[in-house]
Figure 1 (tube, rainbow over the protein chains, first blue to last red):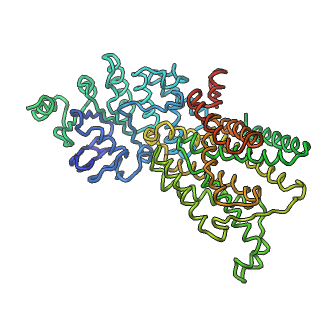
Figure 2 (figure 1 turned 60 degrees about the vertical axis):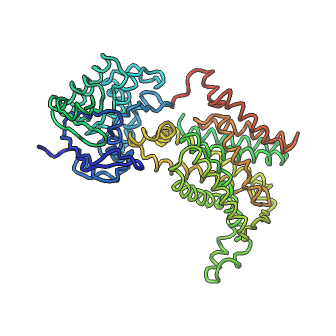
Figure 3 (figure 1 turned 135 degrees about the horizontal axis):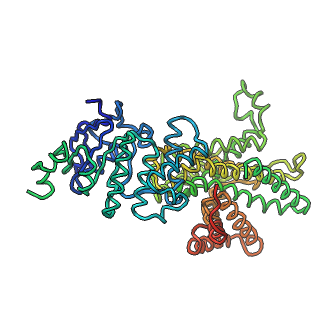
Length: 245
Length: 334
């Protein structure tokens, strides 16, 4: 196996007396599509926040692309190539859709290359990204004019604009309709085919099963299963966690 | 409009204003105009942190006072360098002091900028109300410091009496007025440059959503520090000529809550998203206050500010600029 792009070792996070994550180990190979599932409150979002630097982990180690990254601030991790979308879309409300995409282009892609993208370059890349998620018609609209699914697409496009090596999609499909979910899954697979490793956090099992090459399950801050999707959903601990034993 | 053209227009307006006042031949116009200009600088400075980044600073009076007291301090040293410096460096210092006012303004800007950096570093982890209270506390701490520092007059205050006239400009107030015009140009140009640069984009992301900004690679802490330094420095520069203007400086007048309130109210009433907002707000409120001072009483000033602020928050939360944009089509695109 090639060296993992993301390696999490014995990661723990407490909020006061509450243990949100308890010694989680996880490795993701480059180019992989990993599904991460677990009941509500099992620590999925906390794990994402610890990987992306929004929260600091007390114990354990997070390595990305061969370098240890815990201790780095969130924006430094983004610049290394680690992007995320938020569970509830968090667009910049005072900016148009296009301007939203400009932000990572200026502050991540531009900063990484140490040069200012010209206005023409910005526009061109921005329109490419918006075309990828079929939002090119809404470039001049404000986020408040978008529908739920368009908002999710904007959220993903903004994450992808940072040209990440690893993308974490935190419940990008919650609340969407059947066909919209398919839309987003197809989009994520397209992104994966362009070489982006993706971790998908999701409750919608149909989407998870269609997307994931491997599945990891978190329950009460512990990883209880990790393997091919078909094996994992038959695992008796997993079934127990979801249905009760 | 390109920046050089913008600066040129600013200079033309400034010169025209100066000449108009000059040929009107009444120094009172300069005195009243100076106050309005000072508020344009303060409001623009406040808006860099408060409007662009969304961090409400209640400590404007503190930064203003740093500027003013830098002046008092440097002026006092200039009066009698032999009391301050050891004999070894005295001749050199006697050659340097007394410092001209423009140099004092620059030094005041640096001092206030440094304090901005320090407070920024200590307080920018706080958000919303907590940040506002912390900045208010800064002003109180500084006031206590000044009251107990006898070199700059302590609570008694200090006299800063400049020469009666200045070459070229004539009366000293005309000179100060011209300096303040220059500061207005500096402040407005900086604000407009920020708005149109990637710095402005970064500031706006901080205002909208800091978490998302970090996720997009925006170094939020660094940008916020840049904002506090710029904002603080401009406020300090606005305060530096004040002791020369007023003649007698005492903590009560420099740390006046009115500065903090006005610096917030003017951008809010004018509109916080564009450099034009603080300018319009300061001209409107500043002029009204000057008129009220003369025709009614100076005590009615804050009442006017308060009423207008309440009115605007209810009727036009995005200020005059916002009203303009909603009446005359879309907001102007950079």
